[in-house]
Image (cartoon, rainbow, N blue to C red; front, side, top):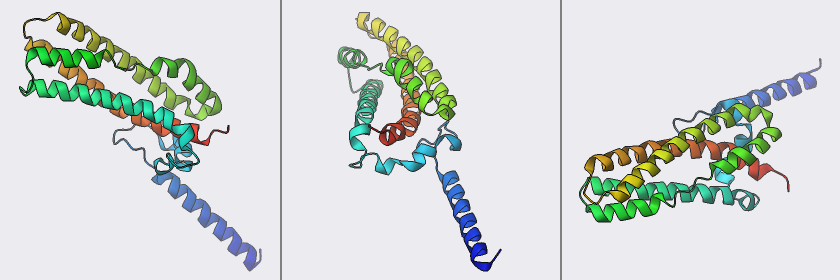
Length: 200
């Protein structure tokens, strides 16, 4: 092998090593993410700082908007519950505000499980284990939302202040909020690059 060929081979090796190092430097946005490095190959091609770029926003903004609304609704609920716990609301005001927002919770993940996730797995079979994690999250979220709804039904019938019920509801909200934070962020790190890089 002549010097020119050796130099080219060394450059190729350096470039490959740099690419490998860059891939392993990618980390999901949530500190407790369950996503493995090997599932982030699309996230590497379309990182979060490009999601709202002119070339991608028309394909990614719809999904992000839905998630933004879910986060906002959950944040408002937690704020109301926390305010009641600290004595800022009386019982009647607390009941009214919490019930109004719980009834508007958007349980959108049935559409994902039945339609979007199978479609994405068909496009990228390597990501099947990641979408299985998200599917399990949906089952846990269903259980938490069912519990929250049942607690809200009791709340609606409680004319007399029931601090124990309010504390139970608050804990359910905390658990749901923590799971949603992790779930929505992991889901976006997988799905938004798929949407943004998809042709058509």
